[in-house]
Length: 186
View 1: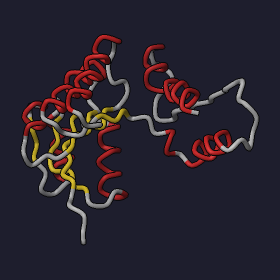
View 2: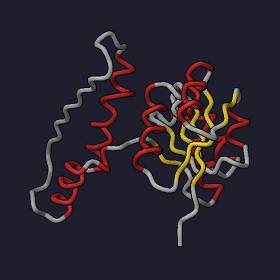
View 3: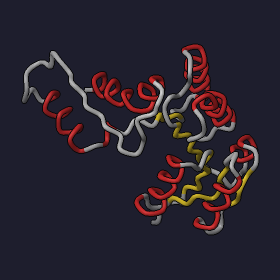
C-alpha cells in the first residue's frame, strides 16, 4: 500500500527555503510542495514556476490554515519563527522551523507550552547534525562505550555559503549553534 502524500507549505523561499524545497523534490518520497509564501513575490513566483501545482500566498497565516497544506516549513526571518510556529500549532500542523525557534527565552517557552497542550510532537527545529553519518557514528561510539567519557568538545563549522561580513549574532545563531547543539546531543 502506498503511503499518503504529505503536502508541504514553505514560508520563506530564499536560500534556505529553496534548499528545503529542492530536498523535498529530489530526496524525500511522498512529499509535494503545494504552497509557498515569501515577502519577495519574485522569489515566490520563481519557486511556483518550478513546483508545478503549487500556490503562492501573500499571508503566512493563510498558508498555514489552508486545508490543502498538511505540514509547514518555516525559513522566514528569525524574529518571525515563534509566532509562525505558534500559528502552526494552533492549526494542529507539524512544522519544521529553522533555527532559532525563537529569539528570546519567553517566546521559546510559549512555543514549548503550546506544543504540550496539543498532546502531540509537532515541532522540529532545523538541527541537522544528528542526521549526519559522522555525527551519528560518534554518538554510537560514545553510547556503546567504544571511547571513554568525553571531556572536551571541539567543533569546527565552516559555512562556505556566507561571506565574512556577518554580524556576531548571525555567526552564533546560524552557524556556531550547530556545534553547541552537537556538544549537547553527543
